[in-house]
Length: 235
Image 1 (cartoon, one colour):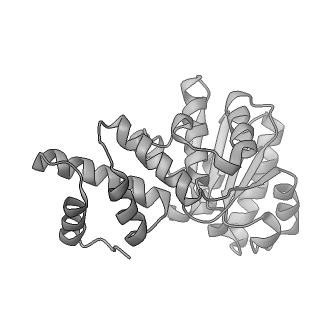
Image 2 (cartoon, helix red, strand yellow):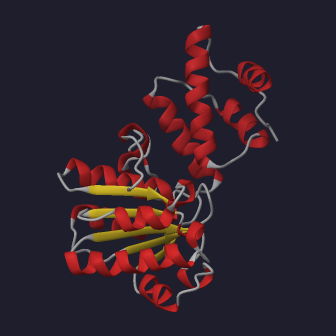
């Protein structure tokens, strides 16, 4: 039986197209949007480092296609107990997003299941959207035919945002929550905290709740005290 995530986890409010800052990834962003809008658009394969935004784009595509009335499924292969069974259990989706393909590299059974799913989706007119940490050629797949199929997709390297772009996104997200983040707060945060955008946005969520509970503005002393109490790394 296919393992699926609850709707609330599959389509987080923050991980939608309107919350994605393309930066240098404008072409990839447009291609994924096209695939979410139109099943006959070219299939897309995204590769990039963790935190680059590849999972964000997959979830955003699923949310948009689902809102348009298409059947969608999102499979985070790294978190599934039996990825081969999950891949064999999906069918009939207008859009199927497969995340963390590297998790099945070297698993011959799962690779065969993905190869069969690829061919089935082509025959049924479904759309596939892939994400991984490396290109198909570099992923360590043991099935040459699967490597060839994935290599035929339109491929994009997802580039992480630079510091200035991360600051822009963080300030915009804070503003949408009614939070004012001074430059001094951002300077302190970027000098000491992990710069992965996903981690920063997760921290912003926590700070939002903590500042509301304490009825205090987010300042450097408040941020320092919060991180100390939370035991978060500030390096």
